[in-house]
Length: 157
Image (tube, rainbow, N blue to C red; front, side, top):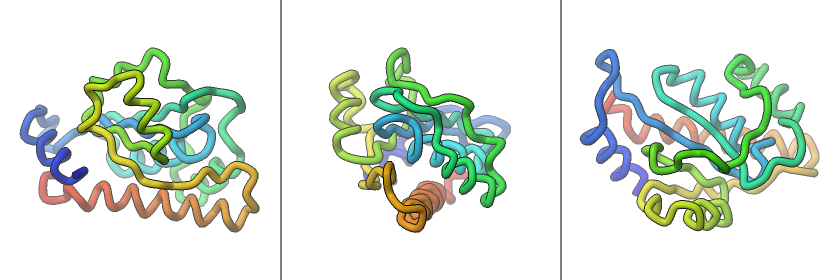
């Protein structure tokens, strides 16, 4: 379904500088681990895309482990400074909304029922309170998913 949506997005939205652009939003619980990590990784690879992230609520700062992982990926400079919530986000403006878990999809739909066809769920568990090794595995899964997102539409770029 994501492939179909990205293909549709490329057919309907303008191109910038001859390179396709998308507006992508990553959503998780607190915008502390998963979604800001995915945002930074994608922003590094596709600087012409509009990439953002948000959480259902905001409780704590972005995790130091995320900063450490992104430093190893040479993507730390693409990390936002503070977590954000979905409040105030214009959800209909995004071409693709990536929910880390189904609960995030349901929350987005409660705010924007018309966004149904824009949402994809990655089923990435929350690394909060995990041991570092387990956390790093989750971060690796996110990196793989970001690369899949790019691969799924390479022929459009």
